[in-house]
Length: 503
Ligand code: PPY
Image 1 (cartoon, protein in one colour):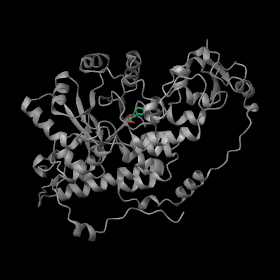
Image 2 (cartoon, protein in one colour):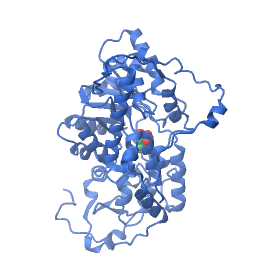
Image 3 (tube, protein in one colour):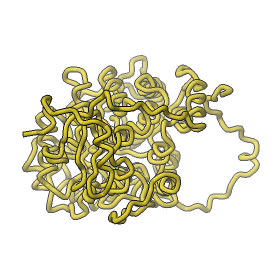
Image 4 (cartoon, helix red, strand yellow):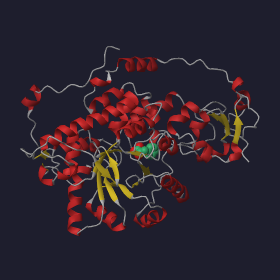
């Protein structure tokens, strides 16, 4: 029986404070007291961070990086000690830091949403007022030298259109179906984790905007909001995909997948490019700064590497032994279509096809895993060629993600054989800066750009897109030996982004 039933006696915060050591460590989360002493060494983020809040209310630190039910599901019931007595909580007057004041001023000075005219604008608007500097470092970081994250954008620029003219383009329709689900755009919202580091409502901003505008959201295993919270926030019948990090404990994974199936999820995207998390140096540096300025080194604790950044700290559960032999098991535990997310070569695309999964995402994880891995767009050509040579006939969808910021990017990927593209960061930045209306605006920008680009390309539906409509001959040319046109560069005035008002 749970000790934390309604009849549990209230625990005073004074009592909780007595348990502030490694030998007896209690914390308060969402008004309930938990004994986490035995859990300290199991905490994926290390014991140090818990010990920092020993005997105190840890809710504020806990919230952005854990789904609300993480503590109740991971901790045995006899460690749920009961509700804290609200009368004993002494309100701590929080000092408003200079950083917080600056952030508030920037938020107040943001350009109005109708001055945001492209997806790059959101990136600028979300950087400065991002609620936590750690959040911004975590979201924006990519691995090593961040070559791949930049290449993801550059690859689109190496593909040129071959537009057709004098076709009747009075009516254009950019809707499609993705894994059998209607979608108002050939774009789905790709999974990004820890949404509450960027906005108090986290991923629910995406859910509400997606439901309103007929776009499909992929729910991240490591979302800040729980899976059920997100699904519950959808409108009736709203389709969702789910992204899966495979747990070392396959029973946990099985339960998660089968629960997703029960809740009607329409696509299971298994991440296959992250047996270990990439070294994201922006994230790592910021973590170091945080440690220096805050955390006390606790006696006797197990060493947690201090330089690993937010993501690495909470990724220990991901199973690096995941391999092709596991695919039949996944196919046996669910009827949800399975998509392998993070394929980077034709060889692996063929293995995926032969394994019986329903599709693949050509992706380098937003440049966050193997640096100097190629862009999804570039891989697309070798994959479609290889599947054609194999005589692939069964339904097998190919998706691309990474660097998509324009409808022209989307149309290039579709012309080269993608069924749809994933967009992660751009939607995330949209809600960091403007909440749900930001995401709606991002969707609107895609719509406007799709309408214009389809007309100018000479297509009225997405089915009419063909490889002949693009010239992709330069796509796999990676030489850096192109002479800079310095005079041109010196005279060219870069377009400007929306501006902050005087803060
Ligand atoms: C990423 O950061 O790239 C992710 O895919 C999410 C994540 C977040 C925290 C730990 C592991 C992975």
